[in-house]
Image (cartoon, rainbow, N blue to C red; front, top):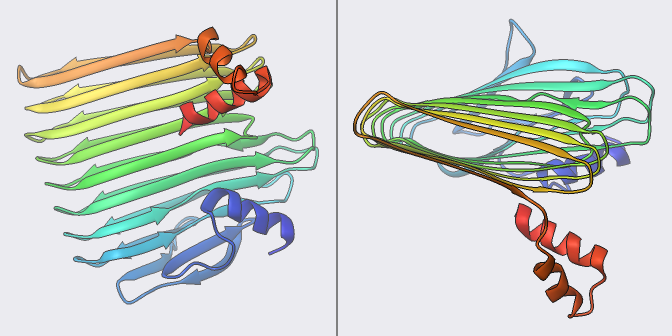
Length: 305
């Protein structure tokens, strides 16, 4: 990998070198490195681009890194990665994609990730998206995540898109069995004329399952954002969806939360808030010696964490 690709690997997966444990690194449409372990097997799909990641039951305190980097202008790819997490696991999965485009053609990565999480397993999934380069070609990403949680399974998703993606459609769907829980934390910032669409849909099917979705976004310049979420409460369950956005300049933000209860025992809540940075926050930080621009950046940084 060259210096550009190594820098993007650092941005999307916090890697300065090859990680310990299981990993699969994809660069410009081909494998740039792979390692399986005794408990985690990574297998190339035979019918379409992508990999199967199989984690043995009872695997704990292990990780899987599957970052993607693209530095070739005009490259467009769809990659299908399926995760099979056995019962009673406790693992961390780090994904993410970085696109460096200095050419005149659009570069695009569509990552379709499907998770099959076994009974009482715990998964922390971290996904970062990053774009850079001064070419006229766009940097496009369309991540799709499908989550199937069996009885008692837990999944935490931390997704971030803070810089450089011109257009994105982020789709997440999930179904939860009895006692399962899903916690999603999304952070997005758009600038210039960038456009971001986030769509969430969760079916709370099992007794005493729960889902919590929190999206924090900042829209700057002339960018646009659209957030939609739908929680379907089909049993005794708890669901919460929240979208908080800071809007600046001539940006536009649309938030569309939706709840559907098919059980009298479903407890569902939605919240949405869109507003500008409060003047008193700026004044307070400026009295500590920061310029107005520095104060804005400090507030935005804290908001997106």
